[in-house]
Every structure is written in structure tokens, then in C-alpha cells.
Image (cartoon, rainbow, N blue to C red):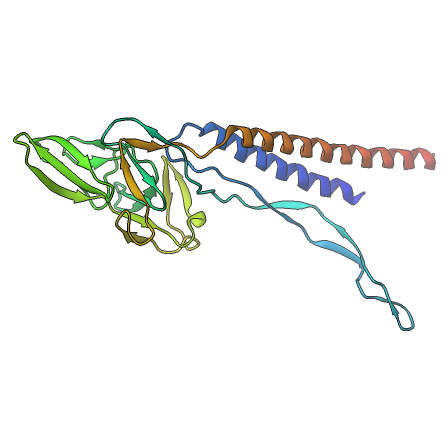
Amino acid sequence: MLRAFSTSATAMAAQQTMVDVIANNLANVNTTGFKRSQVDFKDLLYTKIVESGTEVAAGYTAPGGLEIGNGVRVVATPKVFTPGELINTGRKLDVAIWGDGFFQVTLPNGEIRYTRDGSFHINAEGQIVTASGYPLEPAITIPTDARDIEIGADGSVNAIAADGSISVVGTIQLVRFPNPEGLSSEGNNLLAETPASGSPITGTAGEAGFGTLQSGFLEKSNVQMVTELVNLITAQRAYEINSRAIKAGDDMLRTANEIAR
């Protein structure tokens, strides 16, 4: 059987994965704080028929070799952490990170997760939580007598009482990672630490390489529809041309069989 069959099959499978990733990017074009994924490909092992530098005659070596590749595979789907556009919502509990960093939230089982989604709310206990109800870490509780709140660029949360007095009730901490591409996507706009991401580095917004906070804004997805559509067309055409390679191999085998008859 022609090697082209299996080689083209690996390419078609890889392009299917690329279309899956593009579809997920496009599906999340309006997801707050979403970061698009890209697809990294890697060529497979080569069949070396003649090694480079093989002696072809006494004192003479071949300048090149004869090797045939065996296809391609998807090696990774890293997230691209370029900033998304900030949109003005005018809502004080909407907070965007301008620069590097993630919010920390606590799951019901006590585990910590990370997110760029700053659409916060206040629950029945007065805690600042995500849209899914996960409280910030460290937890921040707004007093019941507060008539308004303000969130500073450094993450400080101020409660304004009915008499106009202002008190600091907590600070929104940020974390960053040596390799954010190594974070694991958990759904619900949450990311989890992995050995590849490195340990989280905690800090204050605006200091030591951390971004600043913008109250009244949300960070949109960094998905660019034009880019994704171009990638989609590229993947589709690559899939088609590899299917043609399989058809060409089939035609060659059919011709050989007809000759044998």
C-alpha cells in the first residue's frame, strides 16, 4: 500500500483537530476574559532510505540523503494570552485586568482556580463572588450598611456608608504564572495550576509586573473573527488537498491493477 495513504490520513486528522479548536474559539467570541487557543503541529518520524553523507564511491560522499516523511500530528493547543478589548459597562463590580494577572477564586471543595473574568456580584452573605457564585480569594465581604462601593486600580475595595464615611474592606489580589500557557482550562471561565504552568506568584495590582484593575470595565475575548475565519479556510483547504492525495494514490493503484490484467 502506498505510504501516502497513512501520511495523508494523519494530515486530515490534524486538520480536523484544528477545525475543532477554531470552532471553540468562535463559540467563545463573546465570553468575558476568554483567551483563544492555537494549534501547534509537529512532523512525524522519517523513513531514512539513504543517510546523508553516505559514501557513494571511494573518497566521495552523497551531499544529501533520501528520506520520506510519515505525516503530521497535533502536539499542543496553547492559549494565547494577548489582551482583549476593554468595554465600559459602568457597573462598579465589573473589573478588568489591564496587563498581566489573574483573579483567584475558591471552589466549594476549597481548591483555588484562576480567571480573567471580572464580572463580580455580591451574594446573600455580602461576599464578592463570580457569576457562578465562587468567592474571591482572599474573601472580601461588603458590610450590610454600605450604600456604595469603590474598587481602586490597586485592587483596594472601599465601602461607603450611609453617612459618607469610607472604609477599606479588603484588597483584590492578583496572581501570575511563569508559564500561563501551561494552565489547564476547567470550563466556567476557570483555569487550574499544573506542573507546566509553575507555581502562582501572588501580588498587588500595579506592582511587580502585575496589571492594574479597571473598575466599570470588562475584558472581552481576544478572539479575532477574521483571523479565525482565515484559519478555518486554511484548514478546510488543507483537508481537501490531503483527501486528493489519497484519491491520487488510489488512482495509481487502480492503474497498476489494470496493467496487471
